[in-house]
Image (cartoon, rainbow, N blue to C red; front, side):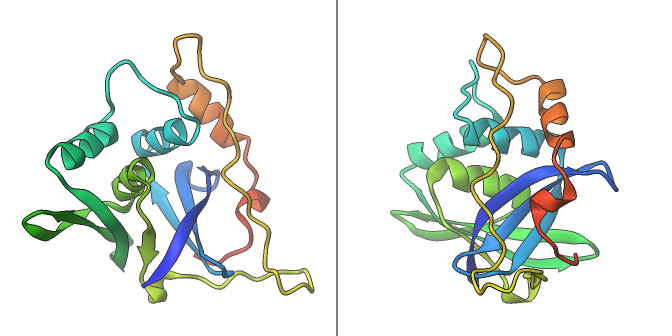
Length: 177
């Protein structure tokens, strides 16, 4: 397993699907994972510290883990089978370690809320082709800030879609899925 971080989140215009790009910590390899709109919205809302009046599902998961005395030790993205990615939540409690099967998109959203590290199976990472001659690899900053939330502190699905649609393929770097 290799530690990865969230590098980008955007809309893949060729499939009209949301994609999260994970990047190897201290490296050049990427892992693109196509996700649903609710998970994309949840990740974006958390990145931008937008709070909803009522908790979203991922906020509820965080509350449940904490209320039951657990800590999310790590998330592991373990495999891909028939174009479906699999992940595990590693939750430590007084009773020991529990490994819970979960979708990567949900796992990422929960890990971000609990400041837990993300890991990916080596075989899932893709080497990035870089046109530059430097050895630093492609440049990825934190995820691009999204549109400002509405006056009620919420981002509408239309605002999220508009933001994600403005991202260009170059924003993701060069990779072969």
